[in-house]
Image (tube, rainbow, N blue to C red; front, top):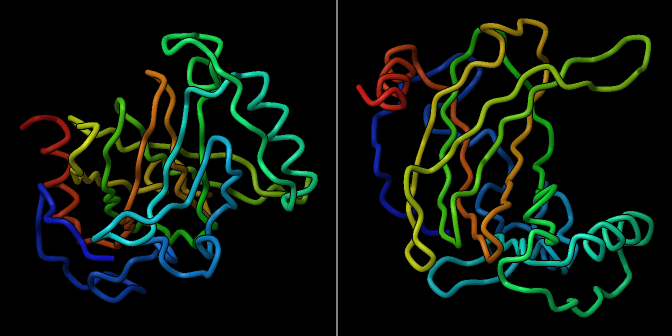
Length: 224
């Protein structure tokens, strides 16, 4: 995957337990894997897709204009048997709030990765589409009684502007353990909802960064 120029560029300092510039999200370009992107949730073929764009390679497409009842039923069926062929899309009005985009939205998750205590990170993503999507960071801690990972932290990257045709790149800084010191893992969640339409994602990166870069990203996010 060829990287597009970032709106916000900076040199990464060498961070603890990570090589400078190393992408901690496996296969953030989506190019690894034969029929689907390795290390990512499987696209269901109705609301989420892996597709190829000329000059980029594999990208993620989301369609939020799917009828909500159809989307929920297909999500359940696909979870039971991911070899099922996707159904034909049920037509709905372009501005219908009965869409999945007008309600729960559409999402696709990365694998969990280790969270280093005290570490600052930078999340970067490429976007285009019908409206502003989100890229969430979801942090988790281990629940010893329930024997499962439970939510304990979240933040999100929301692009300042998005075009339906032209790609743009945005970044934020985050640190899961500053206010939630028990966080052990986190993942990326690509998310789109309203308005109804098509949304695209590419080049998802999470990098360990030095404190000065974190402060620069905070100032940028605050408009300073």
